[in-house]
Image (tube, rainbow, N blue to C red; front, side):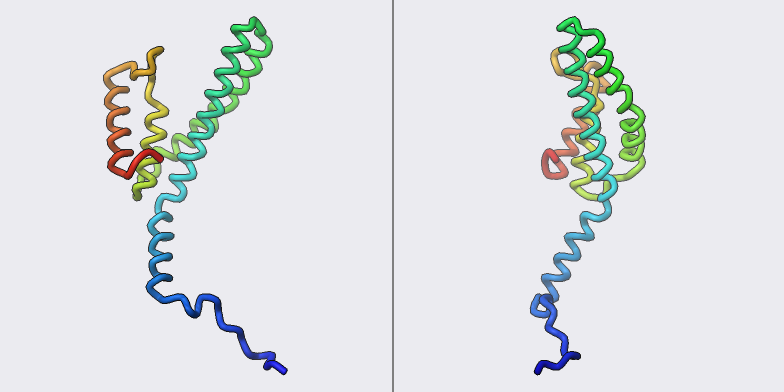
Length: 143
């Protein structure tokens, strides 16, 4: 009969210490920007939903359905306070990793004002877009 007090070996017992410390280092290297990354992803999702609703509003207006267009506009307006709150959080948190820089640059690019041709409206918007793309490149590419 097996000894009831005997413990079974841990499944990590055979894992070399170097592998464990490597895993811990990778986890720690991402942890500094975990909240920033979450806020950036949340903002990008809110922005995507806002834009989707805007497209639906425009389609409803083109179809002459004012009531439906107004409903889509109301849903857009309801997103704005959350967008502003999350954007403020993104701006307050410094990026400490390449992932954080890439995501923050992606948020910055979403904020660039563009014209009908898709290009930046002003010199300031051109500068912001250029800087954000440079940061994405330096941080290892688009998030």
